[in-house]
Length: 214
Image 1 (cartoon, rainbow, N blue to C red):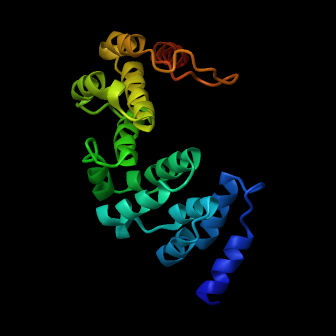
Image 2: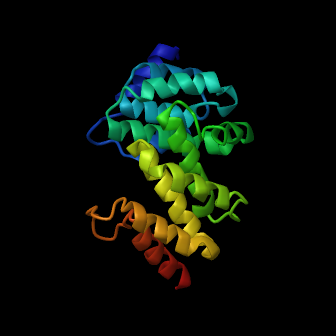
């Protein structure tokens, strides 16, 4: 089957109103790794097609230059889609490869707000997934305290997440993280849905620590 026919068949399985993330994972499982197809899907500029493309990319073919190009494309989407795509790229590709992890860890001061977001999201995620916390928590917290209020909202969220995870999993920093949340007041007045964890750090930490103790 030609590439164009395969592409057409794949696109016919994607529908903005009914396709779920689980459906995309099923489709990706059928395709397996196919970087050429991923680039074809990506070139369509369609949100769901780009989510699927991320799942079937070959991480060994990613580089800073390629990621910069993907980043620029992602920033053309509405904000909610943009954040979903960059976070999806981190979770499904960048965090799966040592070379990509090294790249992410170099993005703290990247000119790209999305790459700065991923730097902080990855730092928080390392703790959230149950790994032994890296030895950089003191340095991270100092940076968050100095810069979070000056950052772009997309990056603020990830810095806030990282601070919350440090406070949850490293008791020696808990009071400092709670104080950070109280001082910035970020997300204090945010309305969250039932059974959702608030982003306001003092509440976030209290809820998650209580869950762990159970």
